[in-house]
Image (cartoon, rainbow, N blue to C red; front, side, top):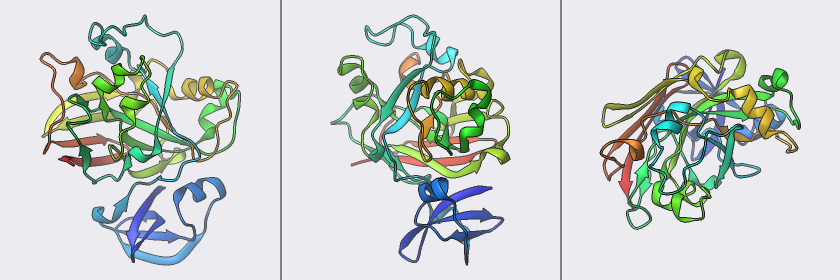
Length: 278
């Protein structure tokens, strides 16, 4: 199934996408649905892309993220990390983003040149944890996933380098991370290592990869992240971006006011967001 949040009758409501309709659920948001489930309310509304809102907005904690999870991306950035180069990691690299970054699948990315001069795009597959777990074995890890969605981890590279090598600040600017357009349940998606992922800027393909190219697969990410740390229903985990980022290009190219960023997947839909000065 595909779960959505929609704007309807002056409110945001969760629902299930069914052909050209949305079947509304008896819950306030999709976090409640992930945690406790929900029944159909009996209300049915026509579907259009314009009614979609971010599928998740209420989080128990910061958004969980993975860095350097495609080796081609790790290698393309060598010598371009402004003194923060490291050897290939032996384990996944995790960081977090503040929850106020989230915007909808067709909302504007809030671009402010006073904050950063190096705005970059990062198309990613994200997953939503569906049940509580700690020290989860790799063999069981995928059973903890409720569903999958798309995100673009729009980053400010100069901020990312400026705070002691910690990425939180350069990844947490308000209203900059598109999420959606829906959450595809794990059973419908199937193998998370068989998803094609692309990012286009103004119609030009900048990133194009398969999740088969991940350095650490989704099951390993969940297992390693849960080592000594409890994961809970509704937690959102971004799984890393492939090669093609603007910071690694020759010459470098960064997002500008008016750019249109498309993040798309063969199994997860499409985000389409305009960069707009604020």
